[in-house]
Length: 96
Image (cartoon, rainbow, N blue to C red; front, side):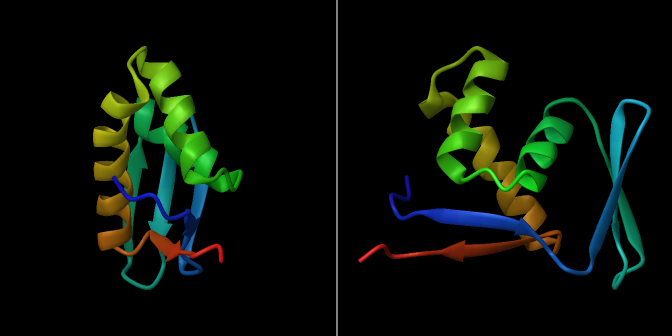
């Protein structure tokens, strides 16, 4: 697991709206949209509140009723997927 502080933020080309049990994320540059529901919607919401990775991990572990180590797998997969398709920007900072 990466021990450096990681910050994820929404890409400037992305807009989103909360709608009837889902979050609709629109990639304006690519002309694509994504519907996030359930756990994905919760994680997206936390990201928009600028929660750092450790906080995301703790919240997801509590939501899924699993250990933080177990929650890290789906959280990393979601964040990586969203970063890969351009919805998120990722910054790794070295505090030193």
